[in-house]
Length: 427
Picture 1 (cartoon, rainbow, N blue to C red):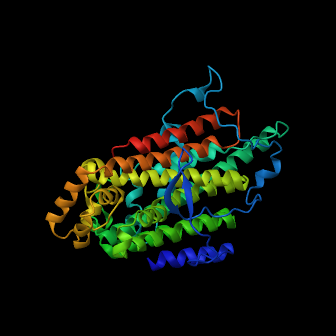
Picture 2 (spheres, rainbow, N blue to C red):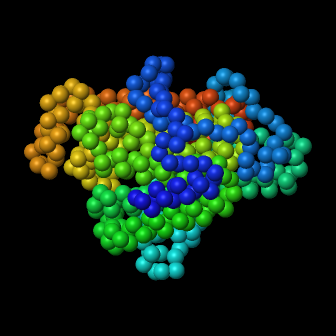
Picture 3 (cartoon, one colour):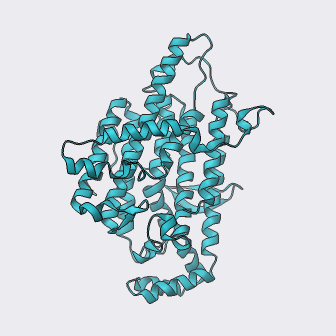
């Protein structure tokens, strides 16, 4: 925990910003639902972006500008367009994902055999998971592709496009290393015995080596991040690391009142889950050289997608099975972690407060809490809240500048399709 916190502070110092708690922080703001009504929950504000182009050599060659009007993005441009077809979002970037997987395995190689074996544990074939975050980031990169002036020579265009795509892939790799590092640390804190359907690393190699493997992955992510040479991107990713630490701390040190608070739960969820994907999406936009407005839309998509993902994850902890989820069902409540379904059930059945205050060391309390949950609309209301965030994510994509580039439209359609996969997933 302290290692990751120190890392975030150090990265922010290199970027010329401060990540100290409360340093220049704005007050949380409220989100609007798809109908325009307040969701009634408070979230950390979207970080400000300097309205300038940084770290993008190709920007000098960009002479065409995207329009920034309020016209919504349309997926159906004409009857014969490929953008009209529903395509598997993961298949669209499958080749790139394979390249990323191979590169990640080489990036986490270490001189010490045991450390190398531990660091690559979740990057091995069959244990790499759904690769959800890299998929989203690669699609976001395509969805934000800049139009290049027709006067640009073919060789120059090819070089610029290839260089920029490699840098965007680097963001996906960095994000995945940070994510896996957080999983290794979290499994130690939670004393977990499974992850991604396989035995957790801490059960195989012990807590100490698991923590060191997580630290090693973070150090590799730092090296890759520094190589990008973009201080704003460094600051965004440092913020994501800080938020991971903050969210985990919020989870393990809650007071009685905080455990009962939906606002506290959602803020913790943003820190633990949504911050990494939202700041990574924003980093892709910044690295490409987009304006602050476009970068903010990328951030909003990632934030709302991440919140919806975790809300459904919390539902599946009650409704899924160990085999389908790759972890033990009811793991949150058995660890005393109160999530949205139970919080909504508490609103309907106040007597649940006493059960939760007593804790769940007693199996009878677990069964009693589940009985109340079954009688309530906790599961349904959590799904409805997740749908609200999916709608906001879709609106962010629809608000992106117009483009008639077919690949851009296909990628935007895929990003919208991913929101539907998140809301309907069963594992």
